[in-house]
Length: 213
Image (tube, rainbow, N blue to C red; front, side):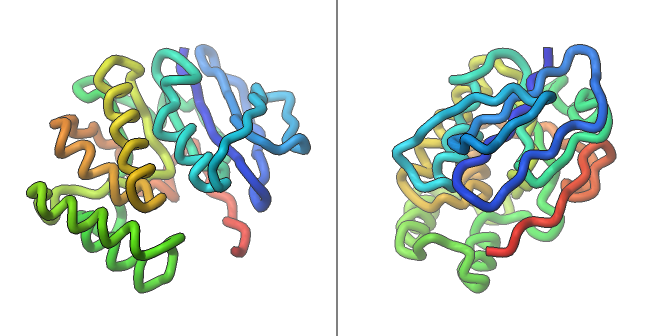
């Protein structure tokens, strides 16, 4: 059974129902909002002592705490339009997790600089401490960068270990999960499989327009 999961905390996002049904697929949405309802998604109500964005990150990174077996996490601005097994494909055959390559960058330090310029951070101070710590520990530049909006995991001990370490990094630093994920993969020696294609244009996942912030 492949569990497709998403998380919606706070205002601003809608839940899009899958356009079909596929054998061996389960759809679960974690949310703190009473207005989120669906006949296609299992709705799991949760409260978190975090900001809405960090609550989302907690579920995303530690999804193994809530569901077992293989998973495909998708951000809430995606709608499933084809069999999710086809999205995962063969990407987990040799790796405990997989994702699409970032379409523009291959370095967490470059990604951090981009986010800082665009002011897409809750605070620059945690990020600064985080980057200095990564450099001090020897994190190489251009190690790799993966889009965090779609993530497949095998549901084994290694992918669980990755998730716990990933959440630890977010708690210590910035909520920008794409910045901490390469560091965790490097430190643990858990390189991902690659889901082919650009994550905003994958067959089977249609990205809806993100609400204005």
